[in-house]
Image (cartoon, rainbow over all chains, first blue to last red; front, side, top):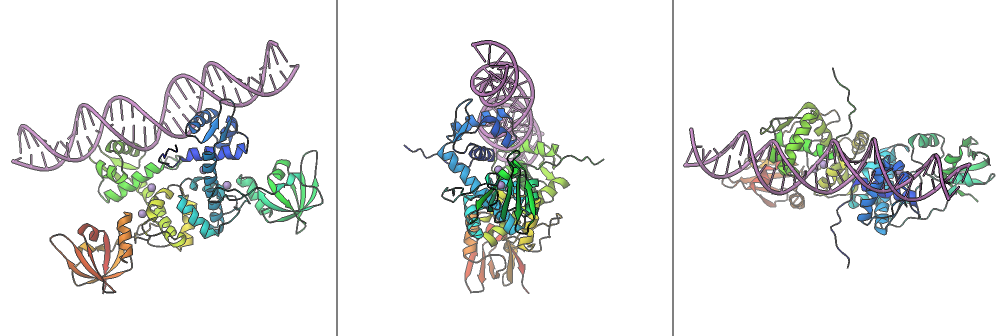
Length: 226
Length: 226
DNA sequence: GGGTATTTTTAGCTTCGTCTAATAATATCT
DNA sequence: AGATATTATTAGACGAAGCTAAAAATACCC
Ligand SMILES: [Mn+2]
Ligand SMILES: [Mn+2]
Ligand SMILES: [Mn+2]
Ligand SMILES: [Mn+2]
């Protein structure tokens, strides 16, 4: 037992599907349309690809019932996520990219670099634990640090929090937050979390107020300060 | 006149064909089998692709007569060559790759990086004029410095020369030369250029002799020292 | 200049990843 | 529960890039 099949590298399409399932499914499963929307692809294309991924043992898939990653699929996805996040860090720190531009470039490069490249890059960067958006970088061994923060949208008024992560990859959103200094590491005082529409009001250390819509506030992860 | 077609990025296959024609054709033209051999692809595949490249205005191609690059094709090829050589330089100088390993990685990365990435990388590297093998790096404007050196196989015995370039991308060959210090920048004394088999004997600054077969000696480019 | 050898092209097939349109299954609502 | 709305799958097609085998063109040789 244990067939040794020549592990030819997976195509970049396959890689992006695996990442999509990983991001969307969490511990559950991802639906056809969710995946289709995420990848800007027709649902029919997703159905077909899930069949192939299942065949390749990367995904568990039951018709009409969504897909989840197998161990191999998860390992593959995390390898890509590691590459992606290390590359983003490199682009920002060494090539002077701005916060909102790193994602697009990393989305292509992640499929072209080798393991060798990835580990040498990690070395050059000093083995960072998080990428520029505060997302944890999986280890070369495939271990991903557990998230210990919570969405700003669920904070309680009156408390000081520190931003740990901005979970959003749309460039205009990142540009907006970046300009205002709402980035990982920043401390904020929660002034109000309005029940009826979820708008959150915060004040930064310079006393500047910011108003954040519900969904946006929920994509900003924070930790309580003492 | 001057149609403005949305310049969608060319596939990596197309890019490699253009580079192959550029390298093989020089100012003349490249034959189907030459290209096929270079790209490790069947001749039939080349014929088909040349048809498409011609259609796209990247290549001039006449059946049974070989192909040469159009201005657009040449510009595209040089853009890739620039990326390739800058990436090789980066891999060696910043990621600690060895001389013989940079080519393979660059061959993939060249298709994944953006112009933005390329120019920022050039900046980081200090706008180098040559890559680790001594090959000139085309400018962002597409200008390529003329080669002013000649093959060691054509040198005259008794002269001192400086290695400017090792025009070979096979890893074992590069490893061999690298170990012996026959790399760009090194000075050598030409001891003998044997007519009958082209073997060249040189001595380096430490007095160590090296014997180089004809083809190998012709892939080492040198300049005369005063 | 005719005959063989080599090179190149054509024809036809394959896989990957995508699409649209039609159909089927599941979910939702009254 | 039945009707309707939503979601997912199937069927069929397509372009890109590759392959093999057969046919055609060109090159070489005496
Ligand atoms: Mn990203
Ligand atoms: Mn990607
Ligand atoms: Mn190279
Ligand atoms: Mn390449």
